[in-house]
Image (cartoon, rainbow, N blue to C red; front, side, top):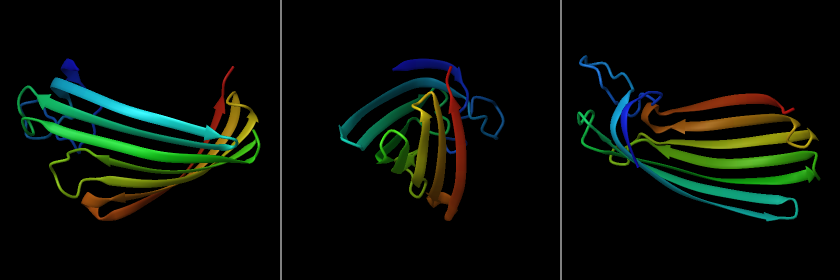
Length: 151
């Protein structure tokens, strides 16, 4: 739990506004309580992860309301097609920025491949994301490539 003065970086879907104008500034001031749980399971080349996060926001100025409850969860599986070199990943996640509001969830399927050259120190990641954005009644699709280098 925290009592925040001015925390920025929230998406517009929350509608936080600490300014005096009508346009939301996406800055939060108020009481914030966040909780979560996660689990991991591994056997051989198969890994399964799951996590649930919940949050309650109580803005000082009651804008956009007295409280907002948000939640998110995911389940992810990964399997080595080539041990310690090539890994396939499938993930489903959902985010609901306001559990009291209808049709504001985002559901995302991710399919990916991780290619490990030197473990996590040097690897390539390729992901395809397919998101259903209920509020906009659209399906977003993305291809993401990432190189990770640690030294």
